[in-house]
Amino acid sequence: MSRFQTASGPGIVVAGLRKRYGAVLALDGMSFTVRPGVVTGFVGPNGAGKSTTMRAILGLDAVDEGTALIGGKPYRALRRPLNHVGSLLDAAALHPGRTGRDHLMWLAHSQGLSARRVDQVVGLVGLGPAARRKAGGYSLGMRQRLGIAAALLGDPPIVMLDEPFNGMDPDGIVWTRGFLRSLAAEGRAVLVSSHLMSELQGTADHLVVAGRGRAIADAAVADLIAAASGRRVAVRTTAKAHATRVLAHSGGTVVATGRDTVTVSGLSADRIVALLGQGAVPFSEVSAHRATLEDVYLELTREAVEFRAVTSTEASR
Image 1: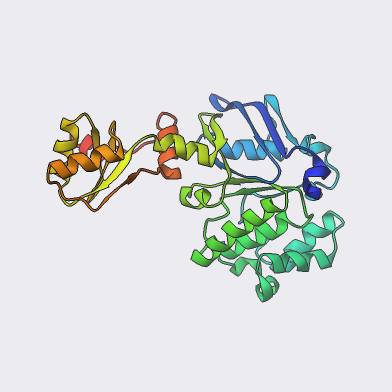
Image 2 (image 1 turned 120 degrees about the vertical axis):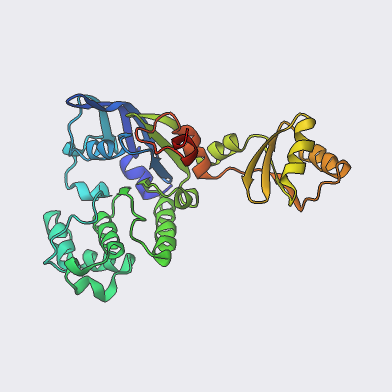
């Protein structure tokens, strides 16, 4: 078993958090667990309570009810907290006149950590010579790397990152995705908040979906995708209208999902192939439909979105 899993017990346990800002109920019983050895994605629409939850975990916001424990303890009870949990909430939270290395040295000194450890994390995140440049000239992607380096200074068993993919170029996104997976593979508990569902699908093992101040879904990514995929079948055809008529006539529910694709429910793949053949409908592919994490997210948060733009069709009514 990993030293990270034995050193601090459970990762993060959030239980029944409630927080009100005046008339706004930011958290309404938020509860979930972030386990060691797992990348847990934390998603939800604007105003869902994600930022407030992460701030509450780190003791930055006091809650009205509930608990948030890190390795079984509240943040305020941790001695040298960087050795227990590393976090990145705001990549812009740095002194622009300091070099990246000096920023890390300042943090390291506050926790009794060495300059050698600073140089180690600089190498881990690939900042290299840029670490000796003033952070005020960093791109957002470079600031993200610096923030990740700061989160790892104490070699913590728990890592929390808010929107770490923001500002990353394609190479940076690939690096971040692999790096998060490697942290979990070492046995660390990793919590990642992101709006980029495509990146979480290739990174997260588990997903917590927030909506209106509570967790509206808390499950393995594979299970959520399987449930959203259902028993639907994707059909690729150059004759969508003809295919729709034939399949609907035999009891299928057909929805156009692309320029030359439809998704069918209520009919098996074998039955669809037979019906298309009998109806002389040209097709190039019939396959089990696999939902994306974005499909899952949109379905789960449909009723939890506070601000939604109307479509052009709705606006013209």
